[in-house]
Image (cartoon, rainbow, N blue to C red; front, side, top):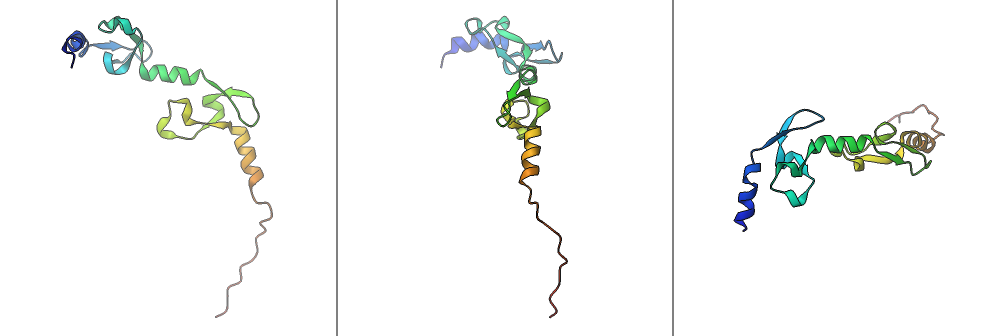
Length: 123
């Protein structure tokens, strides 16, 4: 156990920083990414945008290529969210755009399903 490194980081444990995007005060060590590893004991080594805002901005700026039509489209607007618990991450969205998904589902439906009147047995 290296006690020197723990004491060096001790002054950062109760530090809070305001996120530049959401303007909420959050814990420096838990809620901000370490951007400069060689300046670890200093608050300036951490980003000014919290982790949640960083992930959100990355996802919003992302585009994805549909595996079916091979067109690049917006990740949030044109792809279905398939894993609700991983919402801020790109891996939570499908790889088939909404238009191709709807087309595939409509084409795969059974077409010859005529309604026949049910006759009940007479026992």
